[in-house]
Length: 467
Image (cartoon, rainbow, N blue to C red; front, side, top):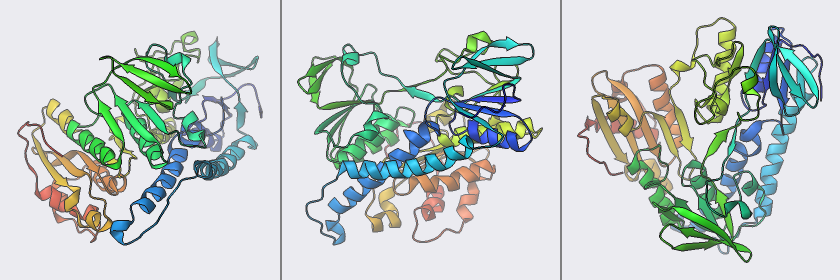
């Protein structure tokens, strides 16, 4: 613990992607800043989220390529995965980043970085009180960046089972023979595929009619299809009513009486903001019905001088949105005209192949009353995808025909997480969708087909579309 003062200009509660970065910028402006982090430096992304999961994804991808090399003329026999070695590789990468970045703040000469649980404790004149480990510090400005956490669904008996979440799953050193995944959204699909490639028989159980319920149903179904083709069992429209131990394993009972047995259970059914133990009620910070801190377009809460960044504000549960939150707030505090209102949602789902998404889905565009033109193009017709042998998926463009503006896109398939950036940039610059028609692209790439996809635009008839 390094506490240089007890009275600060800004106190940051939470050490994820937004808080420490903002602290560094405010410190460079001459402010007295303190950062409190309950747990390892870096928050979810560095320790249990984006980076460690992608390290394991790389190991899983290597195993998959080795097993499926025959069509390329590459024959590898007896492929096995040493999960312990894959986890050790992941840990070495993460520890290096954590030590480097965390050390910068822990050894900082002017930023007070404290590893402790901190919470608001009312006001002291114009300042807010923050308590930690029996001590009190104060500041007129507070920045909340506490993140979010996994939440188990309400299933009878679940609390009596040693279930996994996406944190504890990352430390397994052996693949369970049978892994049951409760939840078919982004985390469930990504983790299910990784552990399937590690050697588990994976069953994904999704209560809704489609996996990835925030996506257009046909896009989501296409992702479920290529996972099924790879050997995962993906079940939708199932409701789990009970969980019970079965020797060293577990049995889940469905609403219709069917039972599903496994060795381990992964809970990937949702997350909630870490807003319930911050002392928000002592200073008048409002939350919505789900616990997210409500903010204006500059992240100011209902309490003057208190801001909320990252997952806790409900404006995007991604590392990149959290990091941009701090950039927006830093510029706003410096008097510059920038707000979150200008943000266009952009993200990826890191299945293999991935889904890249920007803006509205087709369903959202229809609901908004936009005069929609839409194009779908199968990834199987993309030369680069065929050359690389990764042909699952589709490209979708959603255009506002009246304004000649792209309002949304999905690239499910080979390099979709990279290709989507071209479309995101077009939207960010408010360029005409027709600019795609005259764009010179490189052959052979996946992105080179975007002008062709644009040329396939047609008026939307409101019908259900196939991927």
